Amino acid sequence: MENSWEDERPRLSVVRTQPTLPKHRQRHLILSVDDEPGLLYTREKILECEGYEVLSAADGEKGLELLGTYAVDLVLLDHKMPGLDGGTVATEMKRRIPMVPVIMVSGNHVPAETLEVVDCFILKGEGPELLLAAIHQLLVTMTDTRTKNSSPGRKPTDNTGGAQPG
Image (cartoon, rainbow, N blue to C red; front, side, top):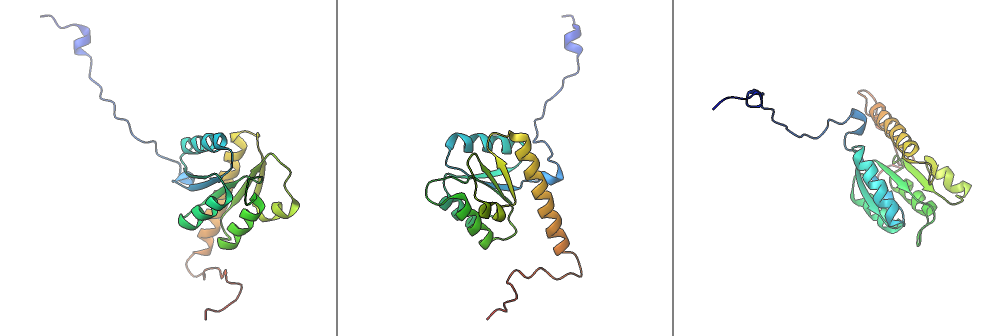
């Protein structure tokens, strides 16, 4: 039996591995809160493709519950939802965890007092590039702030407003 050229080709084995994520995206956990199921699904898939872990909530109450259960790094929040609106949810989230960045993504008018509570506002329909850039910027800022506050020789920031434990 003659050897053909094809028999002499080196055999390559293909090993599929997970891509190494850039340092700024090392599995940050993002909570997405919106009453539109299609939008939640699409946003989840886009964020997962970018290397983020995603929790989704269809209303503000569920969003607050998830925030209390998981170590969330950033929140994406709709304004107009049944039950608790995004402004109420954002205020409560910031009360519970002041350092968590909140991006409000809405297609509706958002009151000025709500915009003062959130870290960023993006109009629905702006496209994923703007949202991803805002997420990246807020996570980098949050990481930098945490690193500075935990540097050797520095005391942790007092978030109690000066109140001394009982």
